[in-house]
Image (spheres, rainbow, N blue to C red):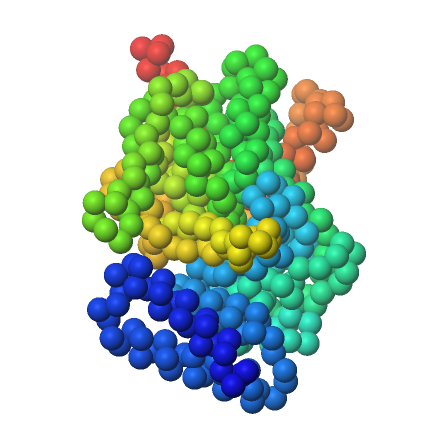
Length: 429
């Protein structure tokens, strides 16, 4: 009798809850709940190893959620606390944004300057084994749990990547401190890099724009916003980032299951770069919040989107906390997909992604087939009449070397320069 007592009470509670929500009419629902209760009781009594009721119930809840889509999941108390830390911009682990696809962990994007990024993990890699544990059959939460650990602890993950044989990568876990926004000045152009959308993103972006203007004495000719391999983050931050560059209009809308359940987010007056040319760089690792920004700026013709098609994560996850009881203070929660994102033009991002205005695959200038030559390379070429200083040469070579490795950024810089030259020509006329 003792074996049956807990499940019976558990399912009496569920049935009571369903009746409260008007589900008593659905006889089939109770039949399935009865089947679930029988399986629950059989597993807890006959499984090869003893499993606690808490474990079974948590796994059942997580299975219900992860079976719906790759982004819904259950968060026990430990995962809930880690999630709170993640969105604040500091957490422990490898530094990758992941999802679940076809039973394996798929890398949405490595986060810049993290152990995973430095180890060469790439967007669209599949993690098929974590240390000695095969990933197939694990839930996303279980995979995350295996990859998390103390700073300094090594982990070996097996990667499946298109075009190459499966290979192992050893990574040393670290505390991940995300600098959400970075900036620099390249050829009188303000370069803004957003690595993820955390609570510090809007403030960090505004500070970076201010510093660029100060360094260039307000003589910048345009800006490049780089959200390549940015896995996303907080919705409100993507809205605020978009608003920095827009004067008016809708930024994004979310639509739930009910047709009338539409939320629209609009820009407030005030373009912080005063309408100057803006290029947004995206790639296959740009997801979620990154796609909201790119989609809004593209639809409003405020920026030229350059790169390759983005990831296509256009669903909204709502974080819902639950307390186990009034007596227990610990909090668990669920991450539940409740809506889809739509760009201002009404296009869904989900599964489609953002298509760049100008598609440019990443690559380098230098290759075995192609090498650039100049007059100085020719036999018996005359020496230059002017000599640059050693410092100038070093700076020039550093920039050129970087742009040789980053074809998309180089083309974005050329595009800004071209727009500036054209605008100057119009002014002179």
